[in-house]
Image: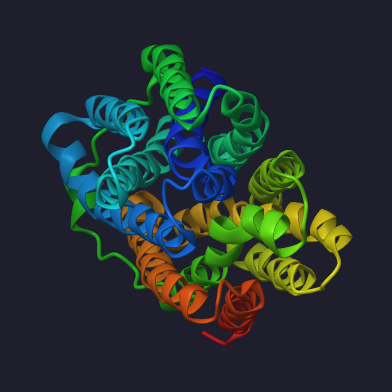
Length: 372
């Protein structure tokens, strides 16, 4: 059986739960501030709430799948993402948005925790690297789609934009649902195996996530309010981030299949360092380099790490992936609240938040290169 049906269904889940439910907010950030729905600090808080919800979804996803099965758990994640988008079409005030952006993050966490390992367990071993890259390319595809869709939807106003994104999630759900992966149950002997700790991998991936909070939350706002570009131009910068993410995940899966995920990870983290450094340059053309490199490395690292988890843990790769994703989410949630406070305290200084991201990215690169 070809790996394409479950891999593409998995990509649709990641597209909806990560590319849209999480990252479509980035081009909406300056529009939310400009329309007076929230201020700059509040908009940063919404990004942090989404990341906190993502952590909760990651931690709860495996238990949910154990109770109701992977396909129904994926249905639940897609339904929650759709509902969260629809609710954000109502201007209910800051804490209303905090609630629903948090639940959108939870939906993305459930989908991300489950779909990658489920697809890899459902396809032939020789196809796992490529299948993992296809699944994770959904994040970059969603980023690019959001960058193109959001400016068009905003012509109808913020409420229309949020509602349009809810419709997009519904269509993805309908298309993917018949092809959800159905991984075989692990044998008792496999369940009894000790799960490797994989400390260096988890540390490097978590620090990578912390370093990527700045571009994943503030990139479009940097383009508009930091570099003076129009909202439409900022959305195109976000499209470049998404296209870079698609390339980074597809190439990451292929390279990891050839040289191994653990050997490929420092390459991707080196690119991440370059992306954060470029974002700190005070000229707007530097964003044309920072955006695609940031997407390539920051999102592409997921495909590389997914492959590395299977190298480390074999049949128990799902457990290591949950730990890696949870660590990534915890690091991002914690740093997101710190950066939101830093952003507000420094008078919306983009240099402060992107400088912090560069330091964390350097730490991630160092962890990936450290001896076992």
